[in-house]
Image (tube, rainbow, N blue to C red; front, top):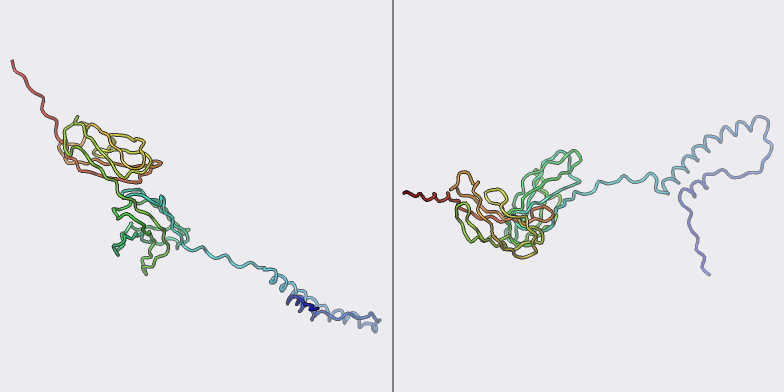
Length: 261
């Protein structure tokens, strides 16, 4: 039969090896007992401290110093169409340092800048950016250092097909009805702006297309006759997830006819 022998821990072996041998008590000569006790006391104190230290080390104390987490970048939402509002936050960066946000655009080898950011004293930032007109597909948004150009943190992002806005008229005077169709919508709401202010909606829409009409107001642009725009905004939870714009030539209203008797 094989018998295994467990080796005692280092602290236990050392403490046993250095422990004083047990002796039968004898009556020492007068005066020698106190001297022997005083001689052994420092040795026992040193040994007790050593054993305590070794025992604590064996039990994992003191704990290892916690390492700082690596830099991380988060993007919300994780997919949207050009013109969408992106909310970006990062953690674990150097405090009070300026970085650059970039996004790739495959198959174009270049990087598009999403402007610069400044971390706070905790090495964090939270910013909002508008998604530029990029090709649909998977992309990578990254935090880049300004000194060496190294990428410190990245997050994947999917660019969806851009919204497509079609109008039945590209010019008109106040009171003119205009038909529209918007394609590549996400489920949410649709709002149309004319000259920078809402002219229709928000209306509940499903994924795909939506059509309708609106009437040109007479209070904008100022002055009437200027070139302006119609903007379609696709929103989810009041956040812009897609945007399309079309130029529109405003016109002055026709003069009222005059009658003579």
